Length: 349
Ligand code: GDD
Ligand code: MG
Image (cartoon, rainbow, N blue to C red):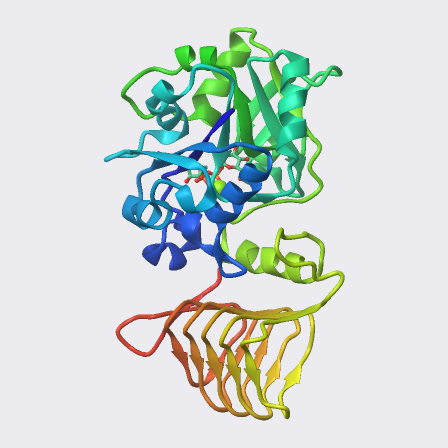
């Protein structure tokens, strides 16, 4: 089965991070989310992938190339102007002549794709939509279904009084190719606002797959910090680190001054240098090749690579992007990004 990633969105709610990177390239534990999702698919023997890009397409293509490094075949489609989620799917029509997977590119989840494919085949539906429960469904596509698990209503970002359901579209679908006949060509169309409601009106069977235990979309800086906290606390098991078993992952190329205090859970990447009397953690990720000065403090934060944290500086509950120098106290919930100065700060909303 082939998989299509919808990777063209502007990621507006994740600015200023997405001023520099398209959302699929935003690193989770130092590795682009899209790379993590491709690796996950490969484990389910999905090795033909189509990336539908629009915003900053070169950043994606330059990184993944033809996919050889991941032992997958990657093809690209790029839109000059956004075609919307359904328009992007229609635009990739030529790649699909049998059931295919579609992913939003900002999803972190433990959905068992092989199980979802089996489920889709058993249900014999035109589409299967993965779903999960959330506290605030009005930010999402809200699903209602009948006793047999077929969808009866799909409302994208409804107001509170418009639905009683807290079951939402998790942004992972399996479609039969006939579904493509229901999307008009060459114009912007939303799969959530237009195609799903249209299919329901026409009486097609859309099945709901509700079996994932961890799910989060990387839509906002708060969620970006949350996914790291969840990995560090072992709530979500990332493929490469088991923080339940070992709450302190410290690369053996890291150099830590013996007088520094490391409080787990913590991740310290390759070639990180940590100065005397500094305190690192808990809930902190320090990616590769960063350095931390004497007496500095970093807590609840994600620090990307090649960052320099000066003597006595502190970074609390914040995100520091690559190549920044931080030389003072960074208040809670900030995003530090490289600008003309040594850093610029944006508040996490
Ligand atoms: N190629 C392309 N072209 N991709 C697009 C376009 C486009 O015009 N617009 C959005 N995308 C991609 C985004 O990059 C993202 O991966 C995915 O489509 C969904 O867009 P978001 O902007 O992230 O949508 P959302 O978070 O508001 O809502 C969607 O995701 C929720 C789950 O996180 C919807 O699918 C909701 O129904 C769902 O609950
Ligand atoms: Mg999203």
